[in-house]
Image 1: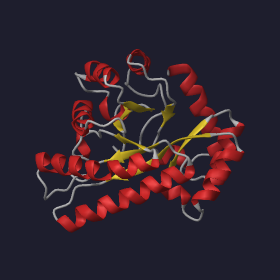
Image 2: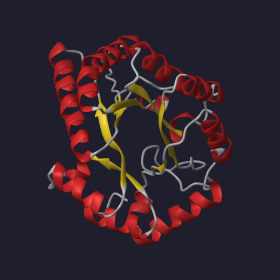
Image 3: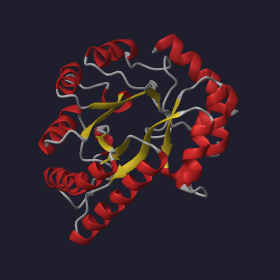
Length: 259
């Protein structure tokens, strides 16, 4: 519900029976972290995560260090608003080959783990669809996200799994099981893939509008031991242009009918 101010969003979610919210950092602009936490607490919602950290990839050492410093600040923000984890969109750069980018991502995550441990905030690596491998993330499959999380050898690092990015993967069931076996599945996001989307970023569908086998994937996720919030994450210029109160009700119904 991007058009809603954070205060409006929290009030409407609570009134609609939605129990949790992941807070985007942009939505906190104009608020202190203490105000954000009080606002959400006062409406009886749980903070599921802070979105988003990451973007560790850069051709220069200075750029990579700046990203590490920024992620430490993001971890501090998460702790201050009561978010148990930060979702990491790990970054990519057209001047950095993908294998090098993945090494930089691992180096960046390792550099901020002590800060995350001190703040008691977990880090969730989100694999993004390969169409984003140029600028947004060099982590493009659940297998790669699992490999990275396991390479850190740390309980504070896991995976955020979004069906929009990974539904097509022939290894998906296997990698969800692997994620669960190592207790790495920290977040689960749903929406749908329209056939075809008019915009690959900003035309996600309501659940049931597309081709993602949502109930099958939910079974895999829960069989893997996931017991957290199932989060609806829909980027859509179409839905953002509509009345957001009606949109929230449409989300609830689509969730009940198709998830």
